[in-house]
Length: 339
Image: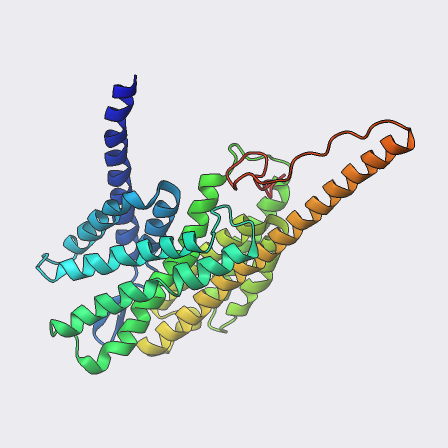
């Protein structure tokens, strides 16, 4: 039995690496569907592969990093003929999510995103901080190999960095939530969820494609989703809005009509970034407050039971042990927002 387990472990690891590579490649190709040209360089406003890479490393462990490298190589090979300088690009695309995972582990990050500190860590360590590596290495190689003029470094670098960071801010929380979700979810609040979906499908296209530039209309929708469905609702609304906004920006229509390519990139990334931050941090605050309230209510109920036994002259029941289980323990798992 032990020998069979030892034989299965390498096979399982290879399967995980290949699965990460396939998912990274699929996400990378999806991100390349919509592109922006900044100073002659082609960049993606949202690069979902960076979010897939970080989520895979957080869920499966750091030893799956070869899957990120293989997936990044396949993405590059699907665009241009690989040359020796592609090794630097692969190092940057692999090093950024690996560094993000290490920083989040160091900060005590929990994949269930139950606490505000988890949301803050994902934003500033996983997205804005670690993605500096991929942007700096990637654009630096373009300059070193004379594919990009030195004076164009900063605009391209900013676009590259924001695209990778947006992939982490939007895709990583969604994948982490799907991994930790209970299936099938309860159906108690599907009427309100359906109403939110209908409103989002009507309001978001109006806000994005209208020539009146009313992008701010999506924020009440995000607040509704965060208040009623916590991170699940807010992240899904942010994802829908980002996809439609990116589509409108690359076509130069709606709120992005009549702008130069630099102005389109700046407006789109500012909107996507502020929206993703609002969705992630607001829902994290709401979730943490609700968990605190549940803990206080539970402690009060236990105290009432102890006082009742003391009043009756009986020995009080033993108090339950402190809640020290990890975030993946079923007893401490966050209740579904649909319950």
